[in-house]
Length: 472
Ligand code: HEM
Image (cartoon, rainbow, N blue to C red; front, side, top):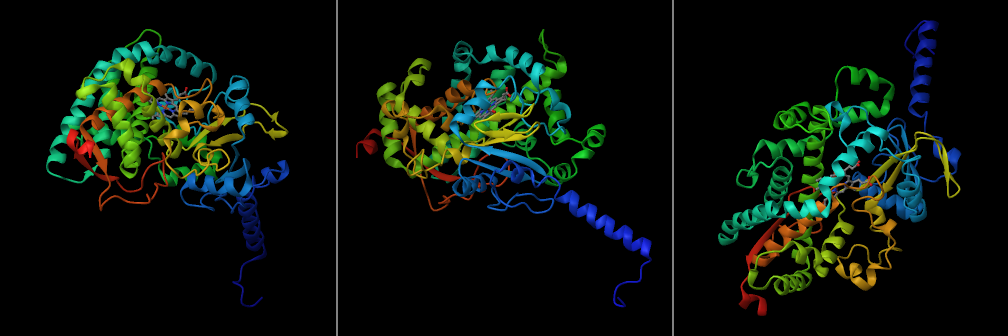
């Protein structure tokens, strides 16, 4: 014992008690799935299963799916999360029992000013806000906004012109990002921010920053959730104050009858973000996939040319009916669904398909992994738009393809996004073709944080289309 530091007996007892509590608390929740008989990766004290398979969380989901099947348990820090990829269970969770048990997502609580945004609000407040917002996203309303969208898709092609003329390599997000922001902002506020001519505009920087959560804060709240009420009281939030304040000043003059001023600000901020980054990423991945699959691009351009001959004006009805365009977009969202996961929290303990889901358990749908399940999607890594052709589409179980989620809590902006993305793609492809170049990263390294996205900017070349070149 002589080599141990000389402490009094009381100090030793205190120290050992502290170490025991530290270890016990750090492992507290980790028997949840063992008790439920659900397989999954082994957790590490405090850290849970984060990064145990792969540092990119959606690639880790894919690896877990291969190892454990369609249901497994994982721990995000200390929080148990049930991953479900079984289509029958998903039908129950996302649709049948949405209003009874699975209305809400996980509430991280530190939502700052955005606590009443539609994607965060819960139960009756969510239902009321969603009902008020839904009429803004009907086909009729989107059709009305189509003229505004066309103004921006035209600007997009004009802006690309100078780059193409000079043969420059293009960071494709520098164009599709501002396009999607301009469309979102002008449809929501009737203001033309013209971020495409000014990509360093604060709107773009704030929207990009809004959902980049602080990692230390995320780890702290995950390991010590009992501090959450105190953090809330201190006004600590995942959403950067400077960014939410920025959006607040942009929209606080708006008024509408049935939402409070605060609710209006929150909805607009959330819609601007939810729509901006997801749609921009979809366009970026479309360009990348088409550049890598020139035969698909050629076939799509043929459909575009026959629907709108001689680079004619793009009409709403014809655009939404283009079949191959729809296949290409669906396949791109299968391979790269911007939202890698869906989440619902169980309000009560419930038994579904012989699996008990305890009260407050977070159920996570690993969409990225589901879209790459080789039993559902043969050659899952291949870009094959024919999977979604008229004949093949009817064989796809709707609960195996979830880029916009499903059920009453699905993406409210789905139709809006589809039109905005299709319009931009068609107008760009009427005029240019995408091609890979020495700077194009193949295969892509993926971003470990936030939405499914590339770690490094995707760089491509654009080639002006001439009838002659196309005939060759
Ligand atoms: C390609 C573009 C988009 C993708 C892939 C996408 C995907 C998603 C997904 C997966 C969800 C979660 C659904 C669920 O939990 O079942 C969601 C929710 C949501 N999205 Fe989108 N989205 C896109 C564009 C948009 C646009 C343009 C808007 C707004 C104009 C928007 C607004 C929202 C909102 C407000 C929610 C939360 C709905 C609620 O909780 O009731 N999204 N989106």
